[in-house]
Amino acid sequence: MQEVIARGGKVILITNENNSIISENVRFTLEIPKTDNYLMPFLMTIPLQLLAYHVAALKNCDIDKPRNLAKSVTVE
Image (cartoon, rainbow, N blue to C red; front, side, top):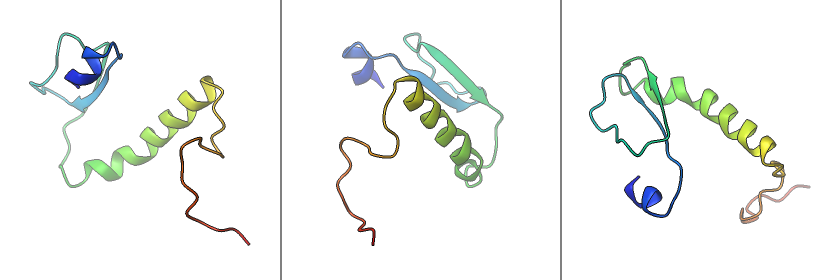
């Protein structure tokens, strides 16, 4: 996170409630309710994928043909 800030990047932090890691250089913090650590990946997968989709759509990126994705699947 510090490297992104040092390069002038804008950090959006998604964290559990009452996390002590929060930095003053973070542009936006989204605190989510405290949940079991093993359950958290399942709860956050779909919301984070939707966030990535909408950010890509706002930036007019072609979400079906990512620029730096190596071809690993052949379609018949």
